[in-house]
Length: 392
Image 1 (cartoon, one colour):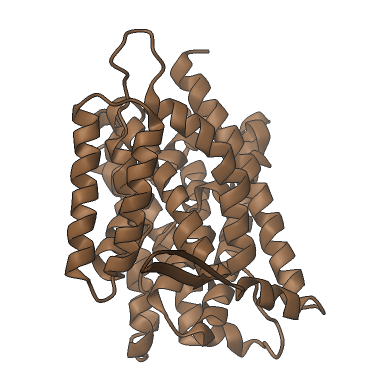
Image 2: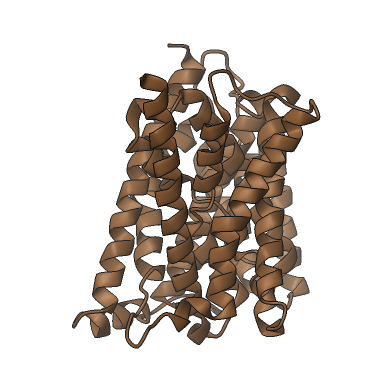
């Protein structure tokens, strides 16, 4: 097997396993919040944690350390993956990038429109328009892992490429639309950190520790500036060099990505899922899903994602902008479109940024979990049936 395909195969296997672990963490959170463990669960997440150096202090409850701190590591890994894919991977040429790019744009725009249409009479909810626009690659690939060889490798790679563009879109959305009041001084210090990162790259520094140390400084500055701190992870990652100066030396970016991936997949993301997926079912009835906020999220993830991704791919092929991957059928493309409605991690994350009122988080969690579950089950059923049809 060629080196590139072997790396992709390893990535897909690891992401698939991470998706199964994510599901377990979410289930554990649901059990904790709906049993006698609820006070312990709430108390753990609200535990105050502070770090102070002189006059500089960062004090947050544990939940926000997970969402602002650990998720910055997740975004750092996303940045590394995006840079590698754009330079030498599946997004390195126009032919490879056009189809997943068009699919990702459709898969972000249509769910947002569906959400806005359902919440048009509830202006206070409209700031959550981006919640159903995201895809959780770990969960989606976890579903595909259950199908084994019924799903062709080309379809998995297409899903991965769409998710990468999806992540890029989410990063842009967070930067443009979910930024609080900005501190000019903190931003100036952040700019100094970025200049330092660029200088390290230009000087050929290959030691990851140098980039990580400056990245931590950048994270603190961005956190204090009002811009969401996770973006510091992406900026830091883009500065890490892909190739080393000396021939035969390992790539600094790939080495760092290889080290971080299991920690993020099996540590950061399950912790995030456990901290954010706890939905209290106390007093919840059918009306909980018919409220415009969760209904808009479910509609965006289940209906919007299908229409957006499948419609965009259909249009791209019909207008000769791109071609379907070899060995992939239209029913399988529809199954893939269903799976992109598994929003989970990024949808919950954007929801936490969109609404500061914690009372809104339960409806958001209900919408994200319900929409992701329906999308995952539907995608599984479609791909299973298409796989069986091909074998007989």
